[in-house]
Amino acid sequence: MDGTRLFERLERINESLMEKFGLEYGREFELIRMAKVTEEVGELADAVLALQGLQRDNKKYQDLKKHLGYEAVDVMVSAYLLAVAARVDIKQLINERLKIIEERVK
Ligand SMILES: [Mg+2]
Image (spheres, helix red, strand yellow):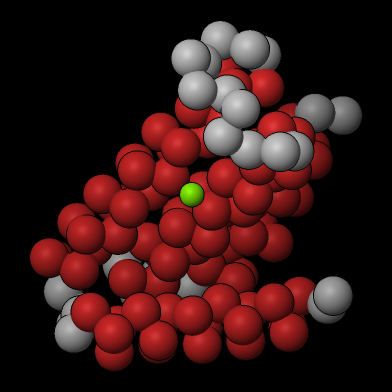
C-alpha cells in the first residue's frame, strides 16, 4: 500500500470518528485524542504481557503475535490522529522525522 492511500484511509477514519462522536477541532479534541493514545498504549502493553505468558487471561486471543501487531497499529493510528487533531502537518513531519532517525541510527 502506498503512503498516499494510507493517508486517505486515515483521513476517512478521522472524519468518521469525528462525525460519530460529534467531535470538533480544539483543545478538548486534542485531549480526547491523547487519552485514546494512552488507552492504546495500555492495550499494547497488555498484548506484550500476554505474549510473554504474564497475563492471567492470555487465552483470550488465538494468535497473540497478531494481537500484539494489531495493538501496535492502534497505537500508531491513534498517535497519527492526535497529530491531526492538533493540526500538525504530520504527513510532512513523518518524512522529516524518519530522515532524522535514519541519520541517528547509521
Ligand atoms: Mg487497541
